[in-house]
Picture 1 (cartoon, rainbow, N blue to C red):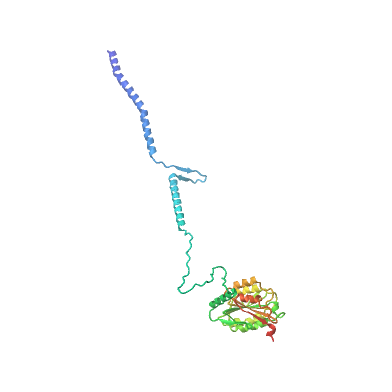
Picture 2 (cartoon, rainbow, N blue to C red):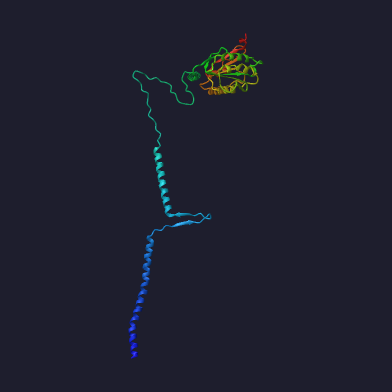
Length: 335
């Protein structure tokens, strides 16, 4: 009886065991497939998600610089935009350049009943135009006279030395050669020059200006290096100034003339015997250029006996600056 019960129990347990084994076999078979499907779904999720990569550079100074891919893309885009804008600006600036063009020539209209006359064409250049049949020195003198008359303000003064033609102006510089040849060992005319200068200064009023400069190889001014008002006080200084200056040394005409011209007077009176060294043509041109249309230079030459050389450097200097030239025979004057 007992044996039959055990046999019956084994028969009942056998199907349960087989069922358990079958279930586990099925689970073990399906588990790898389930894991594979789950991994594929995770990979798909990873590929659909955007990732930003940041690189860090390590330096010894413990300062870090970070390179962001998104920032780099934005910088590249900005650079491309800047290049495009620069190209647009260059193109715009090139479009504003006006090409050279030539205006059509327009001839002067001829009125009915009038015939055209051929006239010389004047071109703009650094030098004065030459007119046919007209002396260039006459043109310069006329221009200087016109400029002086325009620049003068009333009242004006008229001064002439030793019977020379009177010079017109408001400011005067008297440039007196005191080299050895002009003193007592030579012509002895410094006292004559002083007397004449004191006389003509009486014709100047306080509204005029003057300066007295004596020179040999150097120039000495009355009081200071500037034009002085022609007051009675300043005019009274002249005799003592000239009487205290001895005549000696060589002569430097060009340096003295340039020094007098720096005061920018209307008129310069140059009193000299015209001793060596004489001014060369280039020096005369330089002086005339510096004088310009403002200042005229009047030259008074002292000598003994009749005048022998009419076209000496003093006469040429006066002509080049719109001034006058005069000759004083010392012997004739003292008779």
